[in-house]
Length: 71
Image (cartoon, rainbow, N blue to C red; front, top):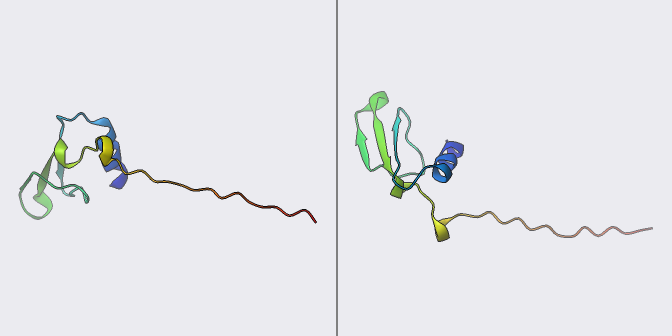
């Protein structure tokens, strides 16, 4: 699910709405929920899942130089 969340965040327009059934998106907040059990459906407005500007979560990798000793 995290990969699908990321793909939708990057590719959908700001006016998009996502409807999910059976399984909710774990890190999104649903704007509406309907049904019970396996018949539950969740609606997500773009405000709950779109990443814009300063809200982006960047991973920073640091590479340290490897020192090789010549003997």
